[in-house]
Length: 88
Picture 1 (cartoon, rainbow, N blue to C red):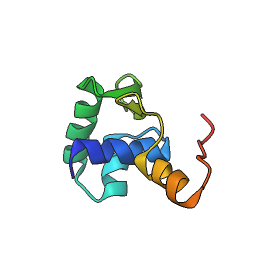
Picture 2 (picture 1 turned 30 degrees about the vertical axis):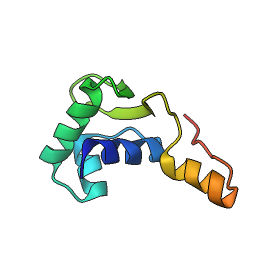
Picture 3 (picture 1 turned 45 degrees about the vertical axis):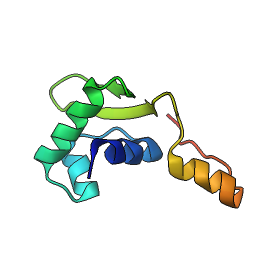
Picture 4 (picture 1 turned 45 degrees about the horizontal axis):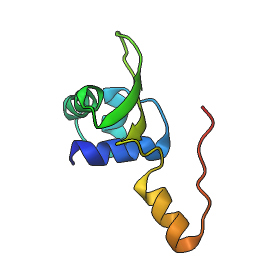
C-alpha cells in the first residue's frame, strides 16, 4: 500500500490516526504505518493536522488541495449521493 492510498483512506474517514491505529485499520505493521504518516506529514502534496509528541496523531485535511476523497466524488457523479463530511 502506497502513501497516496493511505492518505486517501485517512481523508475519507476524516479521523485522527496514530501509527498503531492506522496499522490496525489497514492491516499493516505499526512501523510501516509510522513511515506512511511521516511521508504524509512531510510531503507538500498533503495538508494535515498533527499533534505533538508523545502520542502524535495525524489527520489528512486535503490531498493536492482536494478536500473530498475520490470515492466520495465518484459516488456523487455516478450515484448522485451527496458528499457527507463528518463533524470536526
